[in-house]
Every structure is written in C-alpha cells, then in structure tokens.
Length: 201
Image (cartoon, rainbow, N blue to C red):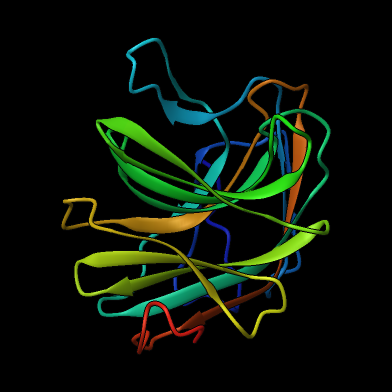
C-alpha cells in the first residue's frame, strides 16, 4: 500500500485512488501528475462507455465550509487533455473542474457533475497556458469557480452530489492522447464560507 502524500498547504493527507504514471510534489503547495494514455473520468450519459481510470489523488477534508484553490497548467498535446480539481463520493457520484484542451485546440474551462451519468458543460476559453481553479463547499452544496489572475473569480457551476461523505483532490487525464502532465501550484485551502457565488469573490 502506498504511503499517503502530505502537502503542508492542505489539512488532510492525500491518497491515490488510481495511481499515475508519475507524481512529483514539494511537500508544500506544488504537485505534478502525469496521466497515462487513454485515461479519463467520464460516464457517458448515452450509455456508450464508462471510463474511470484517470489518476486521482484525494483526501477527506475537515467538516464545514472550505475553499480549495490551485493555479493549474497543463502540457496540452491531445484533445481533452486536462488537469482538474475533483470532488469524489464514489464511482457513481463525483464532479470535476477542468482546465482542458477543446476539440478546437483551445484551452477551456470544463465542468462535469456525475450522478450515475455525467453532465458535461463547457465554460469559457482561456487565453494562456495556466488558470486558477477553485472548489468551494457551502453546506451540502459545492461551487466551481475559475480565475485568470487568482483574485477575481468567474462562476462556473453550483451543485449537490447527493452524498454525505465526499473527498477532494486532483486529477490528470488524457482521453484521446498518449499521456498528459498537469501541474498544480500555489495550492491553498481556507476554512471559510464563500460570501457570494457570483460577485467575483
């Protein structure tokens, strides 16, 4: 059994639910995850496929509201390559906020909420190779936000997984490619409630 990974920026240890090709971290607020080929986290709502083999590093957060954020950069090579923040209950209930390469080759914010089947939604195109992503818990609900500067946040999604116990963490994927490296830097965790979903805070 692999040893848990501890980052001083986070109040809980992390463990691999699915192991990566490679992982590096500085023990503080920086993490690198290399996904292998044809890796994804998606349950096709059309019933055509279920793919849950993307490497994911998750841990159980403390009780109460919180905000988990990171600056994410991705070595994009193939369509749907991505680095993601993840909320995980079990294989049928989870959600991810992704910095992903679109079919048009543009970096994009994408969110997926899965309650048996995946509800996939595109956000906005990103002009650059890095973006800040954030997960906020508000009571039993979660909110996804993204930011180009780490200060002003754009609302992406607000949802409830319908699960009492959830874990949070990081994921990398390469559904159509030969592998993908995702970098998570400036990782922060705040035990604080988000005051407003849509005012940029």
